[in-house]
Length: 199
Image: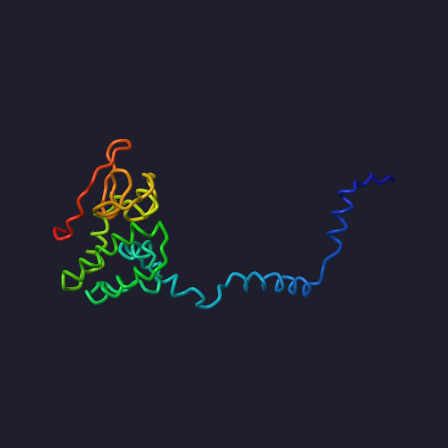
């Protein structure tokens, strides 16, 4: 009786099925394969825990302080901000390095912290976060000549080089330290500072 020709594929299948590794070898390979994966998936203990926890609990006011350049460890974690805490936070601003994107959020944060100091009593973080929202459509002229979003520092338009004037500094029709809103298209108009007392 003639046997039918065997294909190379069939020979490979027969060879693979006939050779079986010992069970102990499979167990050792599985253990070795899981070892580095398990070690790599565990982060170093508490390496960035304080930063991670602080950022996880940020509210609008905390995000503003972070955008103003305050270090994470300086951002308060309590439910309210007292006048003493506000004064302490304001002391950071002159010593922090200057970055253009921090200028506008720093002006807003300074204004809110000054309000807490002048108010004479602590304000809740919820109230401060609500006050932050009053600045969401406002822009400030930065020292580098850009109009920037008050809360994020994101540049919206370059106005021109800033120069010293008789009553301050500015570029074109814009002044440093004054809030502006965007009208239709590329028109900008001066805006009043938000009335924080009515909130």
